[in-house]
Amino acid sequence: MKVETVNKWLSVCANFGLIAGLLLVAMQLRQNADLMRVQLLSDGITTDQDIESAMFGDDGSIAWAKSIEDPSDLTSAEIKVMDGYLVIQVYGWQRIRLLEEEGLLPAGSTESAIKTGALFYFGNRFAKMWWKHERENHFNSEFVRMIDESLDELDDQRNLRWLNQMHKDLRDDTPPPT
Image 1 (cartoon, rainbow, N blue to C red):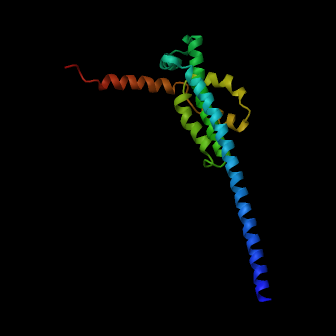
Image 2: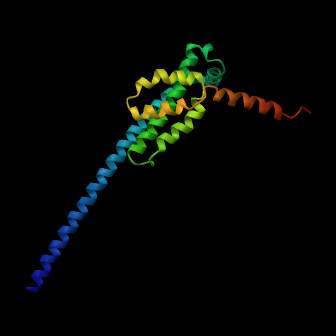
Image 3: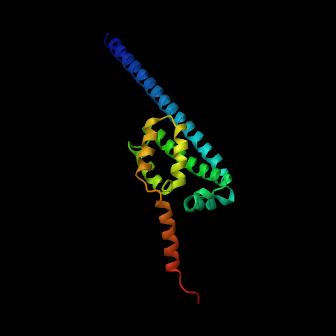
């Protein structure tokens, strides 16, 4: 009788162990599926960024400088280069938002990335004008609000002042020829 009781308890414990193991496996499969979904979404954004990058060509820096110094003189091809350049930045922010929403980045990561990135990429008239036209393509109102607020705080001449200061500092720092 004592052996039977011990066997019953061992059987009950083994069944509980089996159920707990199955639950752990199910949780791990769910976690793996969630991570796979995030990875696939992230890869899609990266692919879009790669496509846009391919359009830069050899004159990307020329279009960038012109968009800051004299945006009204941009050719259609240069506008497309700048479009790709800015689309890549916004896609990067979307990727950060996705990772933040999935709990893989801390809260506030998206807003921080937008505020930081906007300083360099959107501190000029062209980029702000571009966003006025681009914003309607984004359906997450919180995401659009974060970008709008960051751009509203930016001076249209920030990038131009930075570029001019770089030219000045480089001229002032150039040693005389020997």
